[in-house]
Length: 295
Length: 238
Image (tube, rainbow over all chains, first blue to last red; front, side, top):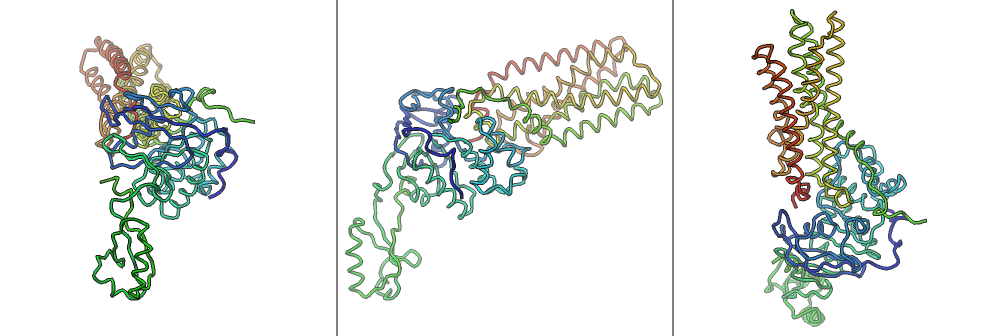
């Protein structure tokens, strides 16, 4: 993937602050989000986690101004969201691609460029950035799911924005493409606030700095991911030799499992295994603290 | 140099690109509607009593095929809704009412294409057969064919749009797009059957009355659409 470019981060002098204050939202009067409050101001990736139907998409739609709140408010830099003035502060990527029928890839980007007052040069740069230049004359309907996703993501780079609301941006992408997109979003998050929903917990842990957990429309957790602790700290040891000494341990695949009080106990475990002449090929955490947020 | 704020500049019209998309996505319907209407015009001109049959039948048939040919507006509306295009546009500040108006404009433009093609071929063919276009024929075209063409197409589009936004997205012939042509074709078929069965003196009462009544129905639907098509109705399932 190329550079984010001249239209990338750096236009605004200070990072934006986004605050949801007692925010309730839903459809046809039925509440999906119930009095959610949080404030983000540090440029970073904020992973929004929750089971299907928890309200992640509804949260993004409400922050982006697509849905009007049923209660509470969205504040941007301390001021209430304003449909006229605030709309050029956000970029929203839906979990579906949002690519119009009957257009070619370049035309689809030009369609959005017109709405965003972006130029042909911006379209060309977005095509290059997402490496979809060879697809520019293909009809959107002819693209694979992964190619559609890349095209949809290219739309995010037509214009610079302060806050990026990305609803499952790596869904339908192959591992290499997903990794490239994550890298692009990571670079973006150095100077921008990115709210990022994903069902991939390993991805979330890899790129996220904060996690917002939503369950049944309520915010159940907002914390730095590095500070999350699993209820049980389990490490897996894959031995090179001397594995028979671990035969009495529970196993997960090739890994012998050890439940420890915390990461600080790993050094002691290593000494213990060394004393038993176990040569270690690999040792790693077996649990993902984010998994427990889905429980 | 700084990039102008989107909020400071008015949103551009998307009508031209929406019309082009309607032509591409609805080309099959447009092709069918135009081809059948032209074929029927030619068939009617080849009948034994062409001058009479053409005058009483041709103006009544065009709205049916125009309704079929104008499905492109509904096709792209349902596609844009299920594919999340509206979410982006609303996020960028495009108002749902404006989106709705654009799709109806596409429907009207596609109706015009079928209408213009059918009238041109039919009336030129009629004249080439040596018949003169009577005042009665003009009255039928102006009093029924033209208003009913737009009424049928818009009725199918508005009903299909409202229906598609009130129901879970479905694909295929069981979807609003699959069934909407029937909604558009049914009224002119009923008028055709009715007009052919009444006395000649009542013919204009039936046709002009039907087109006026049907236009009123479309007007009522359009008026109700503001309430039925809330912002949430434009969104794909979360």
